Length: 353
Image (cartoon, rainbow, N blue to C red):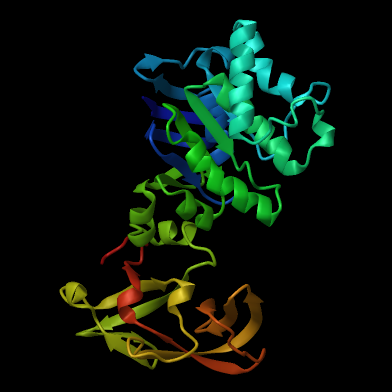
């Protein structure tokens, strides 16, 4: 089963929120929409759900054009980041509500609700009201409703955003297992690159209503085709700066390193390079021959990692390293990197290596 988006767009008041997008989402894995808040992820989900009209294009579900079908007839479930349950209904009735609307027989409704509740560990809470549930239990109720409905498409719009850390971790582990054996197209929107990596599957990078890159999640992370894609798929933000290529070396003011072999055929001139924070090391290793110096502006310890924000060549850079490393705010610190860990781009931001 597959959901195809064929040249779809969304325009409101003359402004394009989704720009001529063609994508295919398939079953068997998570399909992740990744991008910052406001780039069009929720708009795209609403178009798929039928909550907002298309300006152009078609939606094809398993070979059938559903573009003109209303929301109820599309057999699509949507789980928001907010805990949307009917406050006057029990957990059982919340889960059963779309089945009753669809006219499913009572005996089948009972079986589906019980099965979904067991899957989401809600079987002891079926008689409770939503206000008697924790945030995680309310979100599990919304997920159980989508499971019981047996929708062809399940849209998850940042469903874990309003949960605390422990609950996010718990449900994030559960979600892939929850949909692994179901013939359902699952589309998951998030603004967190780490979440996309944990969920795996396929990822679509979005910015300003456009798809910037899409493909296997790990492949996109390892091989961004543009500097913008590298920025979208990096948390903390990726470090970048301009360099001059002269003969067989890259120069960054008085810092220089050998041009990688596969780039030596490129013309001399100005380029851009980028490197992820965890490749900028506070201590020298055998494979980190390039040293840079920056003034520490912020230092923090996050779990087992030390993070340092520092000013480097007019840019704010970040180092993220395992272990505890001591930094003094306002003082210079030397960091080390391996040029082989860098991405290189032309001045238009297109990858060259």
